[in-house]
Image (cartoon, rainbow, N blue to C red; front, side):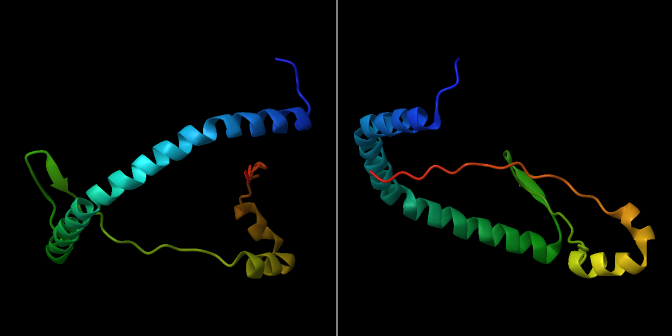
Length: 115
């Protein structure tokens, strides 16, 4: 595939977005209607889940029945470091730099549509 200019890509995207938008809107409306139907069901399930989790955590016990289970993951202390302060400290104590790990985050592009 040959490379297209950004302008051509944006135009193609705009045109396809305009073509598909009526169908997208229709499906999204149907989804919203169905969400209204299932909302009370989801609320009831959330209440049941909250009770199960509370009971399991209060007793620190997991369990299962007929393919439904609850497991307990014990809590732990998470350690984090103040990077700005440690970078300053590293000026006077460069030996700590061997414990520093850095990684690159790739750039991303966000498409905003206004029709």
